[in-house]
Amino acid sequence: TRPLAMPLDATRTSIPEQLQTALSDVQLVPRASASALKRIDLNADAGEGFDDETLLKYVTSVNIACGGHVGDEASMARTVELAVKAGAGIGAHVSFVDREGFGRKRLDTPPKELFHQVLSQAGALMAVASAAGRKVRYMKPHGALYHTVMEGGEQGTAVWEAAQLLGLPMMLMPRSGWATFGEGFSERAYDSNGKEGPGKDEWYNLRPRDKPGAVIHDPAEAAQQALRLAKQPKIHSICVHSDSPNAANVAKAVREALEKEYEMRPFCTPESDFQPTSVANSINDAPRPGVQNPPSTTAAGGASASGTGAPSGPVGSKAEFPMGLKHVLEKQIAPMLLKGYRTGEGCEPDLYPQPRACEAVEKLMVQLNSRQAEETMYSKFAQGLATYEEYIADLRKQLAKQGGGWMTVAPRDTCQQGSDSESAAISDLSRKNAQLFAAKAGCVGYEIGGAQYQAALIRGFDPAAVLRLGLPTNLPAHSLQRAQYVNGLAELAPPVRQALFQATAEMVSGHYRGAAKGVDPTVPWHPYNFHAGNFFDDSTGYSPLDETTGELLDAGCCPMPCWVFSGKFSLQQLEKWTERQIALWSKRKRTLHCIRIKNPGQGKDWTAAAVWQHCKVIIRVFKASS
Image (cartoon, rainbow, N blue to C red):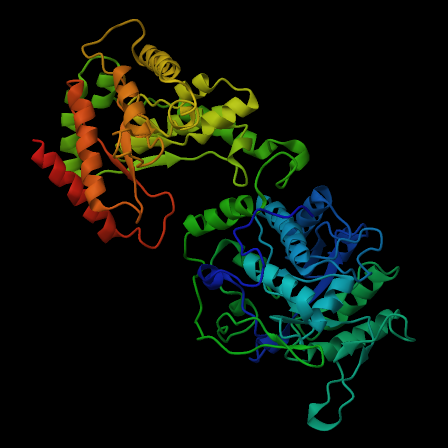
């Protein structure tokens, strides 16, 4: 129930516009066509400590408890495994955090806290399902939370917003404006809405459990009710509860009765997990409407959807590549962005690092170690067999033919970069990958984030060892050395900084060249430097960046000065800055070849036109300096 570090508005009242295209539809799509009306789904709650294995012989979808009222990572993994074997659809069965009352008690949890609880519960199940090659297809609240959502209100809105952010449609009783899929209950008695004539709805509300006849115990009677419910176009799935003593018998009777007249299949088919097929096409021949705005709560306590989006046709087909970029993002990246991977979090918090991740890394390392990286002109420079200027001349030829690109890796924790304990292993793995495949693809540089060194220091690793592990054999490593080597050292006196830079330069030179001096004393270490950004004191001429760049040059290194892109700094200031960088090199009888423009905020003003405008200023200054 720990709140997640999500990039959401603190008031949790809106969903970012850029996420809208990934969100689930709200408006319920009835089973309209003749073929759709002959299909029905049978769902049950699972992972609650009952006989799931027997139940899954009959149901086609399971709502898996994910820690609110019951359940943990182990129970989720077992239930997902059973669902995969049975070919059943998987839904997140979220609840009030009420393990003592099995989620039957309505709690006054603040909406913002409830929002994060639902995200955490469903996110955990999504990660577990992803590990098994499956996708959570929908969300169904449990117990008291189900009724709370049906009534609308702030708590209901919090649950709906969490489902929307995760891209999960909700399965609820059809009268809810938040229902994308309608649900009926085979062993629960209903009360009508009290109206007569065309406005009558005999399936309006479940009879409260404390009222006579609220629960149907006779399997035959439950089967007959299921048949009546299946005739309703707005019902996509029929529920049998798993927590009753007679659950297996009821499920068996309902299944046998339904399959005589209907094709039994999940309303969200597991087969679509590995292709971008829209959910609508698994339940209906007609396209789905677009994303809706949050429904407005009615005076009676219900909810009604407002507005419709533009319809869209079928998306994707089995002919598309199942392991494409979208698949990787959905199956591997998204769960980590949602849950993080710090100790105690993620899909296997008690087995950190995760065994399958370790096995994958070990397998990949064997493959990488079996290959030999191709030599480049940078290899010769790094080994002391060619000069820095010879390397730059070769680089210019390559860029003139193909343009350039960097491979970048930022192995940091998604929630807090200082918690990355795999720094050494990931630095080694990424560097081998870069020198084999990035170089082969034409990349001209390898960026490895400064977070590794910071994290290494925090976790007790030797940051110098991590630095060496990140040095490729055949292309430069442009490290963000702000943590220890440049930016983080403003509080140290210049003599201390200079000694540290000198020691690092000797270490890197020894790594590449051993005891040999080589034909050029220039050290193949290429740290970015944006120490204190673009700060410059006009009255004194002092610039922290210029000072540390000079110290790196004095140590024999190849620093890359960074101009920090911002609307606060004019092009005239950029011109003066570029002149100062050229002068720093010239003063030491060296030539500046590489400058980096950095944009820390990725704001709206970071456009191609603005970037090129800055480049033209830099180019003009270089030409004027010959």
